[in-house]
Image (cartoon, rainbow, N blue to C red; front, side, top):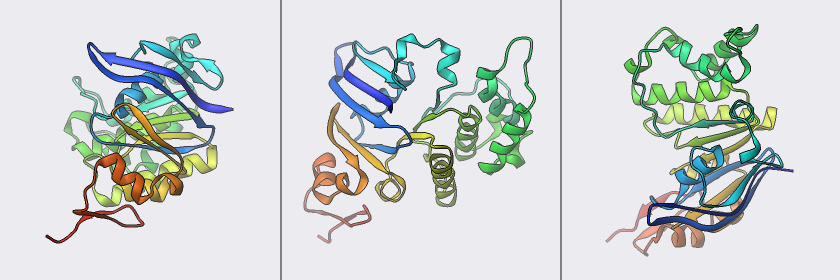
Length: 256
């Protein structure tokens, strides 16, 4: 069974059409990178899947059940979402922020179940942010905050994770650490990963599947090596002959 299925998705911001008739299915246990130029609909797609935006037309299905049929708390046990940016407007410690990932399993009478603390501690360790556990989220750098947001999503322990540019503002070393963590989740727990990236070499190194979007349309979807060819990359990003594309996905400027 597919973990996510999208049928005839249509969405517009007022008069600006993002999607008109998008259909695609993501396999259970897949690790799919969503790539495309700015404005191609990548973030909108993730927000429609997680229920933050309501499509004008079409159906989003999770594990064979329409998104509209899920209660909010049940949905939070199925799918975790890491936004591109989250404005933290109140004082909250890193530990308490990651603990928010356990809310779907808690009740008003049982704020922290047995084992919640252990899960949070594990995710803080895995994302290399344990030393910030008592710091306020507002005091962190952009990269540190991004890693904490990933830790919170992991603490939800869902079967699906959506991540919108989680490598933004993160230095090179921590980029690979985050991707290694996601690959471990994918391989060990069969967590389905759907991630927006702008780094083609990283997408090529870690993804099982790639979705190429352009102007709200699916250009290509399938196994990474079959999709990330030089021809497809050039077509998606409108690269002229001034640019060379390596087998690893690096784009360089050809000498004048």
